[in-house]
Image (cartoon, rainbow, N blue to C red; front, side):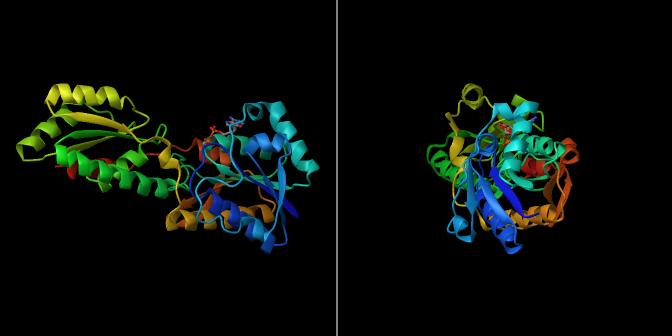
Amino acid sequence: MKKIGVLTSGGDAPGMNAAIRSVVRMALSNDIEVLAIRKGYMGLLNGLFQEMDARSVSDILHRGGTILQSSRCAEFREEAGVRKGVEMARKAGLEGIVVIGGDGSFRGARDLSLMGLPTIGIPATIDNDIACTELTIGFDTALETVKDALDKIRDTAQSHERCSVFEVMGRGAGYIAAYVAIACGAEAAIIPEMPFDFEQDIIKPIMDGKKRGKENNLIVVAEGVGGSVELAERIEKATGVETRATILGHIQRGGSPTVNDRMLASRMGIHAVKLLKNGIGNRTVAIKNNEIVDYDILEGLSMKKQMPEEIMKMAKILSL
Ligand code: ADP
């Protein structure tokens, strides 16, 4: 391949810039030209292209978000949209594309590949909800952000002997909630992967803790379960403990990526370019047992991600 494209699509995640940089520099060092496509699939359809050189990706490694910007593009969900995307890419001389994004973006990448344009997906989302990879780019940074916020909430909850209900992102997955609940010593983690009983899993631990002298309580709720404001009201009613809800929101998507996310993004970018260089498309890059691997995109998307039971048990045991 002589020329490839790179785009970021769907929800942004810290570390996307590190992935862009890696793709650009790996390609250039293999004498492959790179065209950046701005604003995701929408930019592909509208020819928002920009030639990249090694300096185009200077000074971005430490920045959150994505310098190429992202979008959600309804037109690209239609066959005619994908066909137009392939035409636009061909006109620009592109022989392959690297798509950095989540599972929705990967479906678009698969469609491009099936229409004859080899495309590789790099998993980047703070939700860590892509089944074929143990980690997605941005998850580690989001955990750090949420940890900082939760530790601060703990300080104030302790001072007032309050209960805090803390809602974190993750779409349909409870990875952020479960991990920070363990890391920050929350009394309970309410996640979509595990059914919960209001009395048994929330009220009982709070009342038992009170008897043992516990002066504050943190309940972490995953976005996929939601309803944290109503939950806080129910807890206050049932326990008599003043309870406040905090919904952390988009702050979780920003910030400078951690070393782990920069490393993951750099490794995955290199792997993606290696695949395209060998004429291979329709693959998603993943990490398994600390090795960078790749899967057929559809196979990767159809895998089912299971929250390790050990994680769920740990959260319960350590909240005693
Ligand atoms: P994410 O990639 O973060 O999961 P989305 O699910 O919003 O985010 O997907 C991003 C974009 O990928 C969509 O706006 C659309 O352009 C494209 N896309 C999503 N699903 C499909 C699909 N089934 N077929 C083709 N393109 C899709």
